[in-house]
Image 1 (cartoon, one colour):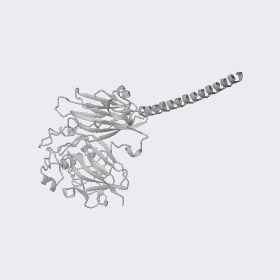
Image 2 (cartoon, rainbow, N blue to C red):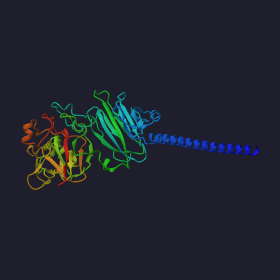
Image 3 (cartoon, rainbow, N blue to C red):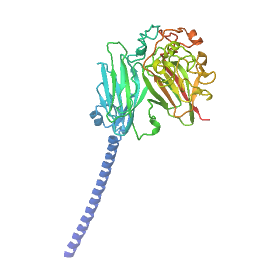
Image 4 (cartoon, rainbow, N blue to C red):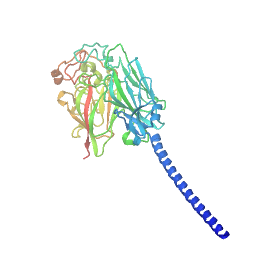
Length: 448
């Protein structure tokens, strides 16, 4: 009997051991599964929390993917979901006096006072470039001697103010680097690239609220990291930068045939060279930047002021070594390096370099340089270049010089002589007014 009891105790002991081992294994497996579930949850949470990828909100504005709590803590607006449904697309909109250091920010209309400033700070220290997209932009236009749709008699005192942003202005600070030009008027659809600054960038509107005007804007601000793909970053010293194979460019405050180009503008428009493209061509949509004498440099003994009326567009710079360039204000033009007629041949110059001004986009040589005939017969050219990088320089001086003699106020008169301009009266025949500016179609051409 004693032996039987000992046997049964040993059997129970063995069974208990087996049961304990089984329970331990089950517990271990459950703990492994729990750790796996927690690990998956934490991994998913960290993606939503730390990736902060760009997203498109349900209102059409761009935002950043955050958790809902992060978005509200940052004073953002929840606009749809992202991150596989675990995050929200957080859109940032700031008003006057607002500050933002997000990848994408929207600045919206506020005309409650005569000054409206926004501060944009880097989202991280490696941000190098900031793009401003003017989705909507309209404030008071520049001074235009009382109007631009009817003949307006100007005085000599009006000339220096033509094109100046007197009532309203928009400025951007870029501490330590050249600031973009001051602009006003209509600039919907335009854009600017500016240098991001460690001290932040300040964007400011000033208004003369006593002057009635349409005032509305929405500006999208996008920050670019210096480590981003260089294909998406503009070259140095390019205020505007375009990608793709065709499009349209125009100066600031170009809206329609009644526009007046801004004064004191000095910047470059640049293009990315696309795959298998080796040239750039331009054709005129609208073009009017005052006038030039019949030859450049003019052999006439008459002063350039007398021969050109608005003499600030004789296609020369203030430092050009021709007489009267510095004092005549002859400094409005666009410049395209190594420009030529299409097909690319017989390069020509206007003044000192490949500069275009006056009211006709195109000049053809009539003999040895630097003699070039300027007339309506040489207008409406397609201008091409193969010089890299593709770049067009805009140079508008700080006003206009008004003459009083030699003016032709009709389309026919300008077409036959074309050696004088508005003088004391704005022309009325449309898109070749000398104060208009430019709108050009552009396209890139295939490599041969």
